[in-house]
Image 1 (cartoon, rainbow, N blue to C red):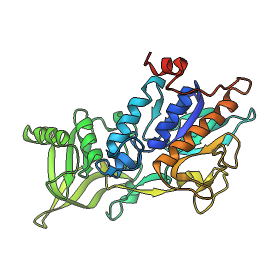
Image 2 (image 1 turned 135 degrees about the vertical axis):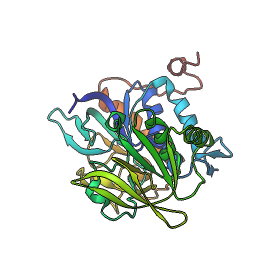
Image 3 (image 1 turned 180 degrees about the vertical axis):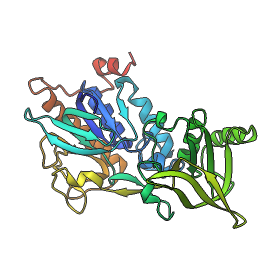
Image 4 (image 1 turned 120 degrees about the vertical axis):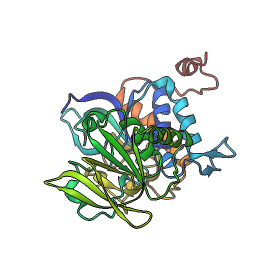
Length: 342
């Protein structure tokens, strides 16, 4: 395990509400590290409905999920948040000095005075493909996310899927792999057109393979994969050498390890007060769809409001003796300097 990262605030979840929390905390000079199980910021907006129009964001008659995330990322640039992606917080413990230590499944520890849970409906969990015996290879030859690219160097990699994650990792891993094969059930992709174009160019150059079909079986022993059996569109079977399999079959939502963090729960949600949006544990807040209180509305704009009030309370914890003066970004030259607009 690497040395713990010490910071003012750790935000668990990089969806829109988590991103806006970075902004509100930044206005109060609080440094944030953001952890997310996905390989990019955006949460549900970018993973489930990037092109779906949203009509109830104030000031935007219409904005796509991806557009909203891009605007939020631009908005928080002045505060230089640090993102830790493709990681899930496994444990949360209270230290003797009152701070909280979090540890991820990538064996990275964080120590913070404040923790903000902005995990939407919970953590995204990858959907396991219906391939017999795949469990025996998980964690050794079958992976649902890429944590360290170097672990795939020189391997025969089979990537399954037709979305952005499948295409992005195809393009990123192709230069370092012994061979990359992309498998999709049809010759039509949901990924960004430019990524699809790059992939087809590599196929035309003979630098990788594209197979239209479905993985139906795996070969290997002791968790070490050697080949994948693929059923082609004409129902014939073929065997493809594979030492690593990356299936991208979409995601499902689960509360995940949050359920074991010692927080009071209400129907798989985290109850909070409506003054600070603090949980049953001091210094641990929950904002967005993950929280519950009487009258709660699961709207992005509600999460933005919760983030603003949370930040004020977080400041009092991080800097208990400091006087907090409420300021407006429209009139405060101090805030405008932080934002780089004056």
